[in-house]
Image (cartoon, rainbow, N blue to C red; front, side):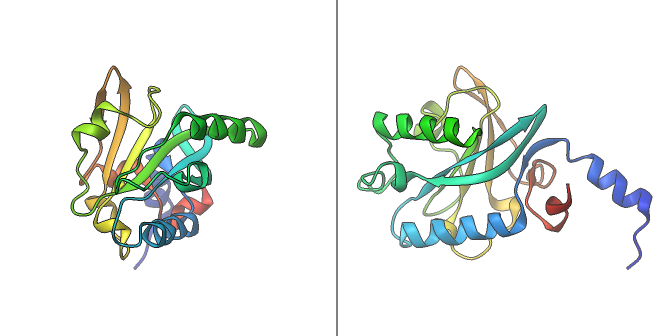
Length: 176
């Protein structure tokens, strides 16, 4: 297969919005969500990093149960106020911000009513990613739920085919 510099440059220039992970970080995140959820309950994590314009760069991950050991007790992800205080403290210490969150669902990657009305971080531009089947295997981007918070419980859905242009976690992501 032959790629021209023009084709590669065009593809990479489209990556100026959305959320970007290095492929190793993404693979490790999925494996850890699978392990922590024990294929029986939801698990989740905050995505820490930096935001430049409309692009968020994930540089670190903090799992919900590291902030709140009771986060998964009900079977779904629930965090209490002290967990958020610890999160904000971590962000200040590391010089990062919360750019998104990710959590698992038992079946499909739909946004539940609870997800829609209770964003983990209710800040415009926050990205919420939902991974189906408790993060078993390596789900392709097209089956993930990818949602961008717009404020006032309004979300933009980047799931399905649009996820390929919004969630950057492939080989090229480590070079940008």
